Image (tube, rainbow, N blue to C red; front, side, top):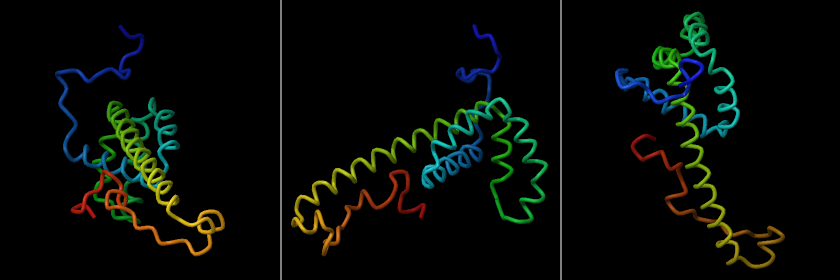
Length: 152
């Protein structure tokens, strides 16, 4: 039993799942946040405003005419409606953490690859940086793991 209603418990069985358009928008936002390397500030910000998510979504309603006149966001309405529900904020946080972990594993593999590649270099290339050879990364390192050829 919880002291406060609406804590981060699992969604009730009677509630409908997240609509597909909102799910797609949350995925895109999470991918962009990790791509811009803003995962930690985004997590801190979302955790701090979680109790005020409904007020924030209403502020988005207020600024919608201004934002829509300046920028062409086709998913603005879906994102605003997704931010009205507290479980979607938690869902967005989990997606950001998942993609950040995938990015961290990718970077770790790249560092391991570069360490093995640098062992093949001569001493002056390694330590002085003179006439470094061009490194050709394998295909698996060229794009983030959540991106596919179709989405680009």
